[in-house]
Structure formats: structure tokens, C-alpha cells
Image (spheres, rainbow, N blue to C red):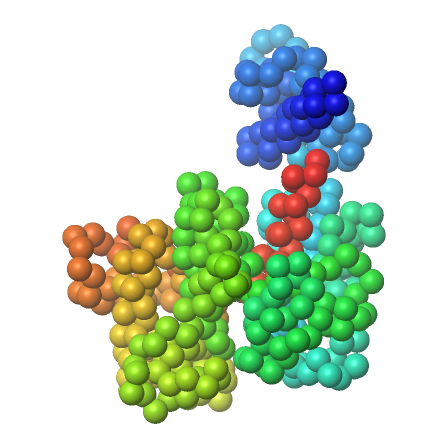
Length: 378
């Protein structure tokens, strides 16, 4: 008897989720559209629509115009019925976004502030940026799903502790310490993981991919069947520490020599422009001799990494991070370099793509994790 009740409850929940997702995907649908599209009974659809409306998740105030007969009620989902906030903290910035149920960034705030988790004022500023985003987005407490905190480091599975934070020397810091002034549900996320997840989330046909984060440090994430593969010790995708030049004189922050991070982090380029990556690409467009030389070397290393990843995973590769935001205009050159190195008969154009999220990908991904969790709880 108990098992039958559990099964019946599971079916009801699943039907409600299916109906809600169908409305999200279709945009505006009638009750009959749902019945035919999902092959559910009219009473089941009617009951679930009433439930979703009661939760404030769908709207039925509009009509679908017909050429004859009565106009049917149009059911649409309310994008901002729930909102999640994501923040990303890096060496010199705090970046935050509010994300609606479609995954769209509705508010974005960026502050320049030097990273220091030992400074109480820094932690206070982190809390203030969350409040600023919440206020600008007009989010009520009951509609805020949570606050995701993206970090340039490896995080424990429960999101409570930084397991590896050598990039900014904050290994061992806990969520409670970092989120001291964030009075909402929150957790920590590894920046590369959530940035990669943001790229594939809600992307039709893109369930397997490798995301390369080309930022102040190099990171990556492996996406399999729409989920992040972290590996047995949460180090899956850490391509920044692939050895590309064993005899290199460049020392990585991990203490090793010749890591991929040492030749393709954003600083390799923007050290020429005093940390201003936008200015570097402006000079590159102007054919500045030094910028051209730096970019040529950069693409050479990047193309080698792409080949290695493609051989290992045989799936789509997404170029993101700070450099990925500028790479659209240089994809043709990169395609040629990759194809020259690749041992098999296929074109990089078919699997190598620039990122969708040009800014705040880690913050958006940290927020989207709460959105996805909410969909599973409807």
C-alpha cells in the first residue's frame, strides 16, 4: 500500500513538471495543446494548471485567437515568478547577477574590489552587492531561490568548503565564513563548473561538452548528459594543469612548470595593457606588432589544447572566460590551426564554439543551479 502511494505521488509530481516544462518550451499554449502534446488526460492537465497558477508560476489572462469559435485560454509561464542570485568573486572584482526562470540575466552589478576573505569589510561588501542586486531586481524574500557564490577554486560536494584555492590562497575557507553577511540560502560553487553548466543549460541538443574557461586562471568543466562530471576527487576538467611545456621556465601557481595555465591565462595577454583585456584586443584589431605576436603564440597553445580535449572526449568544446568573450572574431584562424594539428578527418567548425555568456558566466551558472533545483521541486 505504501509503495503504491509513493508511486502515485511521484507520477503526480512528474506530470506537473512535464506540464510546466511544456509551457516554458512552447511559450504560449492552450489546454488542448498540452493534452495532445503530452498525451495526458484533460482532468490531469486541468488539475495541474490550477496548481501551477495557485503557485504563481503561470498566467492565464490572455487568449489564443482562433479563426472560428471561442478563443482558447493561453497559458504562459511567468519568468520572474522566482529569481536566483549569483555572485562571482575574483582577484579584483565582485560580479553579481539576478537570473529569472528562463536563465536570463535581469540585473547585473560589477564592483572593483581587491580579494581578501580575511577582511571583514570585504565580506560585508559581498553581502551588500547581494542586497543591491535583490533591490534592483525587485525580488521579494519569498521569491528568492538562493544565492550561488562562484569561486576560482575547487569546492566540496556539499558546497560548504574550499578544497583547493591556491589561485588566491584561500584553501580551507568555508561557506559560513565567506557568506557571513548573506542572510539567504547560499552555497559555494567552483567557477568553471557552473560557467560550463550555464552554457549547456536549456540548450537543445547540447548535453555533452567540454567548457574551457580562459580567465585569470585556466579551468574547465566536463558536461555529460547535461550534468557536470567532477571526477572521484572533484578535480575533473582541471586542464589548467595539463603539462604543455615540460622544460618551461614558467612556474604555475601550483608550483609546477609548463602548465597550460602559464601560457593561456588572460594575464598572458593583458599584461601588455596593464591588466586591461579590452584594450589588448583593441590593439590587436589595430595590428599592433606586440599584440599580434602575443596572440599568435596564444592561439598556438590554445589550438594544441583543443586538439587534446577533442581526442579525449570527442564532443563539443566551448571557449569561455574572459578571453572567450572576445574570441568570436578569431574563430576562423583558430579553426585552421586546430585542423592542421588534428589527426582525424573532421573540421573544428563542427565542434568548437565560442561561449554564449560573454560576461558573468560563473555568476549566472551559480544562480542557474538554484533555478534547475527549483524545477525539480515543482
